[in-house]
Length: 90
Image (cartoon, rainbow, N blue to C red; front, side, top):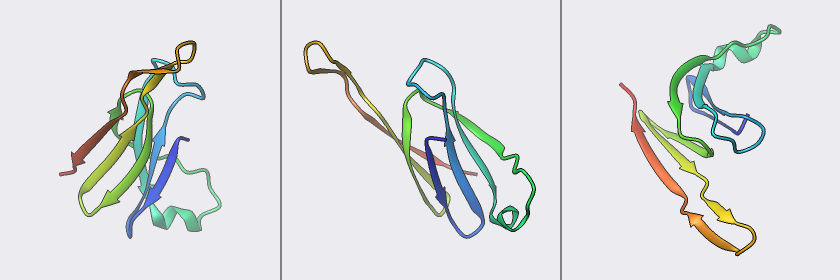
């Protein structure tokens, strides 16, 4: 789990691998009503996200995702800038 956020109806999740690998990251969600159960929660897939998606904020029907950049540690230089994505849900 990379990030959790919630609104009145949903708990939103950014899921990704433990290291920042070129593997799939995902935006998932599940109903807040599931938090009252003692059962394992199986969230639904909303959409794939870019690698290194980390930050998440939900405002009404708009999802704001922050994506890490990348550095060349030997040169202490940013080789890929961070990004910001806005997704409007149907």
